[in-house]
Length: 421
Image (cartoon, rainbow, N blue to C red; front, side, top):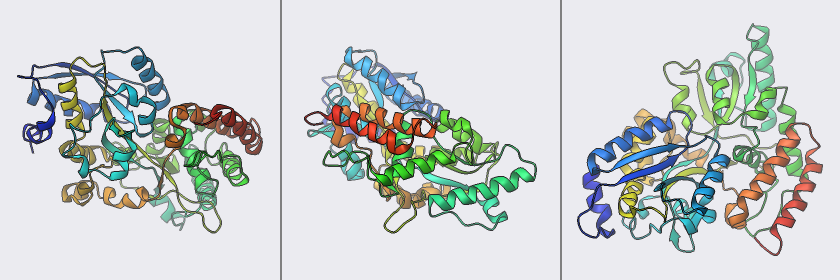
């Protein structure tokens, strides 16, 4: 379906104020893999069909760095940036700086997962439109597990045991670069995601609970983080303390890891023609901690498109946001990038199932998704996350036990909370 036809239906409620003039728009986007290249192909089509031009302002892959820059620009009332690509957790913190898209998107809101629309709605204002959702999984080498007669692990303990056995075996066979597990251990938002999964899947809570209670300082959470610290320098390289998503994928895609924790985008890239692991891997839900009642937990991710309230071309910027969140673009993104759609019907789309059979299966992962505590902590979430990932990174680096670091973290979070979030 051509965007011109889509636009006719979507934009009926957008007041164009007469004949629309072509606009020169700028959009900021940080991405992993070849996401920016894909975005450019979509923007080229948008330009051809609307007469507008769109310049991409690339951002660092670190979401923490992106957020810091966004906040500076928006606080300064920067009108040079029209459209922002935003993390699912940023809506409560940036809501006042974005246009309300409720009316413009009223005919398509119903097509998306309600929980995702809810995550982008602040005080009744839809501040961003979903582009794709995200939940990580455990990537594993099917050939190596078969070689060593192993099954995909259900618990973190099983994962570590299997990882070490296969790593040791492969090194004995001559692959000195083989590791058991790679993940995101750098001190940034990605570590908050990884560590939340370790903690939540072990019965240790969600850092700050939905009612605002600070829960992170507990024995189960400490044990989960200490367990992860034991991986560093054993089944995971020392360098994992500086890994973000792309560094993890680099090791994995060269064939030098048994297991990897990563987002869906790595699936398509792992099966590219030049990948050493092409057709040699699969994914399963992340492991759980040992013990009754524990289950897999996958941090809810996802990216959205928001329109700056300082844009000089609000109508055309809204058109761009609608385009990038449309069913047509989400389908192409799913097929080309293996990104998870936010539009429910696309999970039954035969073209997606044929090109990316993993996407219908990712429902099982998505059902285990757990949100970061951005809703209860509101505008203070970024500070909460920074304090959390710093405490975890200290523990992974050998700077204190998890119990000691979480005790200090609780005190800092209590002070940050004050009389309320």
